[in-house]
Structures are given as C-alpha cells and as structure tokens.
Length: 499
Image (cartoon, rainbow, N blue to C red; front, top):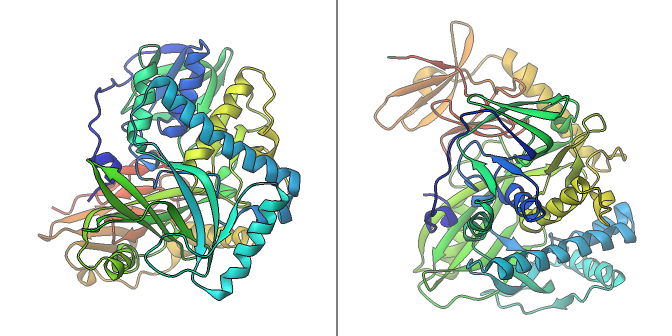
C-alpha cells in the first residue's frame, strides 16, 4: 500500500528532465513542500528560479506526512523555555503561528482547493505519570501569553486524564496544496524532475549544480533535499539523524471525531481525520524509531491496526505508509546559510516531524536572506549555531552507532547463513569473506547487493517491513535491487549477479 495523499491525487502535468546547461538567479534542489514554497515566494518576487528534483514533486517526505499544520510540536515549549529562554520560545511559537496564516494566505490568494480545515489540536495523556508534564506545558504557554487550554475531554473515543489544546490549527491534503502552488508558478519557474544533483561547487558567478545531463549556474542555491547530500563543510551528518514513523488510513464504518491529537509521551500515537471523496477517514500514526533499527510489521503497522480495531471493530484499513524525518540534536531546525564558508548557499532541514509549518518558516527566512532583509526569526533557527548540545545522550548514541556501523559491524562475522534467509525476506551473509546483502522474493529469486551505504560507508540493515536496505547512521534507503530511494546517499548500491 502507498501514501493516502499520493494515491488520492492525480497530478495534472509532467515535468521534463534537465538536458542542457542553464543559468538562473536561484537554484532549488528538492521539490518537496519546502523547496516549492521557496520557489513560490521567489518567483513572485521576480527571481529567475530553477527547481531540480531527483524523483517526482512531493513524492518523498512531503507526500508521506500526516499533514498537520500546527505550532503545537508535542510538549515542546516548556523544553524551549528551560533550554533556551522565554524570548526564544516566544519567537519559535510566533514563527509557527505565522506559518499557519501564511499557508492560508497562499491558499486564498491562489485559490487552491486542498481540503484545508481549521481544527483544534491536542496533546493528551491517559497516564497519571505524564499528566504533570501537560500541566507544566500549559503553564509554560501561559508564560508566553498564548491562549492554550487544559481540558479533560477532547472528543476521542476513550477517556483521557488531560490535554493541552491549541485552537485554530489546521489540516489539508498536502499534494493538492503543493501542486496548487506549482500551478501558480510553473509558467515563470523552470521545474525539472528525475534530475539528480550530484555535486554543488562554487564558481566565479556563484555556484554550479552538477547533474548527469546538464548543469545549472546559479547566483544562489537552496538545499531543500531533506537531508543534505553535501557533507563538508556543513557536517550535518554529525548534527542530525533520521527517524521513521508509520501511518494508516482507516474507514471506521461509523462517524468519526474531529480534531488532531498526539500523545504526550513516547511511543507516540497520532490521530486526525481526512475527508477523501466526501468520506472522513481516520489517520493513525506513530511507532517512531531511529531509521535503520530493526522493525517488523507487528511492531509498526500492527500496533496501529490493533488500536484502530480496538475502537472500531468493523473498520477497514485502506492505506499504509511510512516516512522519515530529520531530527537535529537540540530539536531545532537548521535554517539559513549552509556554512560560514559558502556564501549564498542555503539550507532548511531538521524539521523533526513538523514540516508543514517549519517549511514555511524556513522559506520565509531564506527568501529574506536572499533579498538581504532582516528576518525576526532567523537567529533562533541559525544553521551555523555552535551552542553546546544539551542532549548529550543522543550525541553519544550517534557517535556509537556511526562507529559501530562504519567499522565494527563490517569486521564482525555474520551469524546469518544463506539458507537461513526465507522467502520474501533479506539479510546479510558472508560469501568468500565479504558481506553480501541477500533478498529472496516470494518465488525464490535472489537479489544481491553490497550492503554498504554509498553516503559515508555505513553497513546497512535489512528493513523487513518495506523490503529495503536502510542506513542506521544517517537514514539513507535503498530498495532490494539496490536503487537509492532516500538521501543523503544519491548513488545506487553495487549489485551482484546470482543467476
């Protein structure tokens, strides 16, 4: 099964591959919601813009989201106040509240039909242990003069002990929104799909973005490619990891509640409804884990389906999909210059799981930078910040995992034998002293790859849910045939012939 959003939207136009050398004012690498929003604002300001996308528009993270448009990013504001101060937390909240208004303004201005609906958003708990955290969050938001509410009844089909409610949040169909923006600018903006950028280098006139079939000379470049594939000098691979999470869309066969919901503590459960062809479907998400960690159906989709059937026994599971989100070590996105040494090269990443508002915040900050304007929120999202990392445990875990995957796992013998791999599953075996990734399809056909990530050389792990090879270091993903699916890797895996 595939994403509800991708399956329920028929795109109206196809875009060509880049096949020649061209030039522009701004080259945007990546056509998800962040890249397309940047293109929208810049095109409207009269800039000559080129967008390069290695797949289809919004076909990856932006097409696999829950599409909640909210400034309530979990229980986050008490953390921000304690970690960075009241002024920082207030600016973060203002930036994301403004993003909701900006999105609605784009929808109204361009007359985009995208199922936009205002909803109340709730962070709730059914556990006494987490109730104090919700009350602390409400107190923190009152310190920020934000009109949240503590409630004990929020409309869910089960009893809660308490929730923090934000009013006037929203939801929409992300593909309809993104393609609505595309429809409003494509005559003035060059968009190329199935065009993989392999390198970006400084030149006498700015930057050259290299692809296999043509290059783009640009005065400014925006990396809107989710996880940056350029490693140096930004070193984002040391400052960020990827998290996987799962979603299902359910026909409950009965009336369903309104609103958007997420649990206060891990493992999270997320709920919202989506109106598709006049019918309200229930979306249930959660079971997040660091990308590359072993996961099976029972511990991912199985958990979500059990929740659905608990409250709606006659329900039908219509769609299953999952996504990857970039998470910075201090939980704040990186928005701004790619590094101190690369003028006019910009980045927006680390949106955690809140890309709908964060993408608009990032687009406005970077467009202001290109226009040499001061943005009131740029400082709190500084992409070149060098503040001490407060989350030392995650720093330690990243270092340990990377060391293990790059060095120790490669040297350790594999305990798995070729005959141990069953049909429709995979694993790593040793053949003639070398590690080989093996997948056997349902008919016994063998697909063999070199299970080493083409990004920085980490040993890959087998994902039995999606039948992919995933990188536990930085979240790259490859299908069982070795084709690259997700960044930061951009090259396919080396394959072996077992015929």
